[in-house]
Image 1 (cartoon, rainbow, N blue to C red):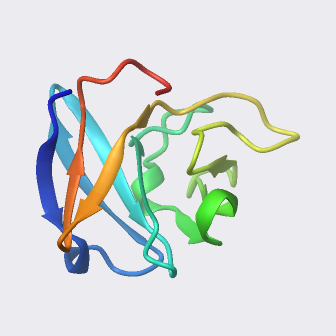
Image 2 (tube, rainbow, N blue to C red; image 1 turned 45 degrees about the vertical axis):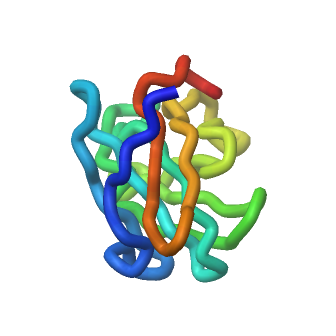
Length: 111
């Protein structure tokens, strides 16, 4: 894996996101109110809206983001659209160590 440090955790507002560009991808790194961190391709599967500008809800495996364009809800843990919507945003492995956020942009899609 090619882990890369992208920012400090405190550089992402709780219930917010930060966009990083790695390996030719715009990646939205999300932080929940419980300090869970997730990373998805910054494009809604519906029409490519910027997920980083959406509203973050919940925490843990129930965390989701609502696309700002048409209200599609995406599960942050899996990248899958929540019913009744369909689709998937590419997910990237992410971890937090000593207050720093790391992600692996080279991981296969959906891992």
